Length: 106
View (tube, rainbow, N blue to C red):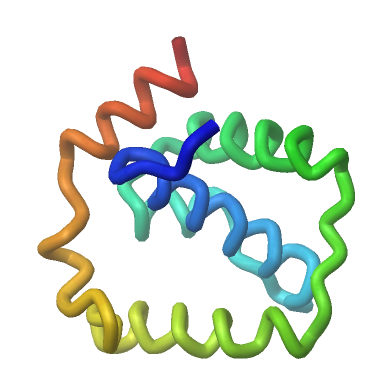
């Protein structure tokens, strides 16, 4: 697959959820991620399973790699913006969410 303007967000969400589940004692649950992303819990589960299949179920990630992304995501959640991308709430579209739902639920 190719990373595109339609695929980057669901890939990022899936990878951040999986990294949280690997590294955090109290991790992001699919219900919480659904509330933040606008994707359904069933779509997130499908995306999570597809990602794990793609990774051959090897979800190892070092603390040195995980930490900077964790703190950047925390800033986005706290402030609603990213230093490089700007206001992320304006960048996310409903069409993108609907496209993911159609793709994952068939």
